[in-house]
Figure (spheres, rainbow, N blue to C red):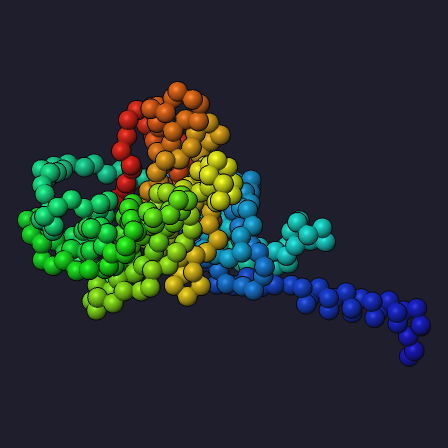
Length: 359
């Protein structure tokens, strides 16, 4: 039986459309829950699409919520209800014809998960040791940092321009060893030290500035020190800043610094307006940073972060931009889930503060 010519054309077009749709479809596989908390659920998946988003809702209601598009997982759903079941799907996306709108090209199977109950914890019998001198050097040291390694306390200090690490008994403060991490350089100052331990590696960051040049040129530096072999990596220059920090998140070091606007060569045009956060990969370097701007009426002075497991908590000391109110500094906090900042709020009102830190 012959197929009419017009019917043949329609059949060919249908086959072409089906083939085109099949080529553009993308699968989303291995959707799984990585971690849960009373108000958080961290989800991961596998796929080859250019972007993804999660559609989720409470299991007992029909209203759905959709996350912002991300390039890859894991992603943490936040501000959830404790002890509640949720259902979710991960959608694969691609840019639409306009270039900025996304369209769905694939979808995972439904995953049913649940948040945990609130677990309030009361602290009792807290003990704080009296302030004592750590006998590592006879003279003053600059901007010390501390970290924990196995059952000892690590104290990282800058002494006469060189950076040292000392292993110290945390109860007796007896110094077991002091080793050189980075030798001094002529006319080079090092300040604002911070350190974290990841496995057997001590990561150290600091602000480095040459004192024999006229321009204002402080930059954040980063190095790693093997606590077993005493091998040190070549220090890496990250970016221009005047204060910095370091935090371990998902088993990797993340750099923290005050971000600027304006040209680095024009002192008057440079304004520190944000706290910047970026993961550091030893193979590819510093990844694309994310910036947190607390508000238009304040500017960050210092920032510090602490790992909460499936998210980071950042604390920042902010000062007002209005003239005559420099002493009215405020302490702010914000959370970061690996993709975005959320939950910004003031922790303490105006007052006099030292630089914040967290543990």
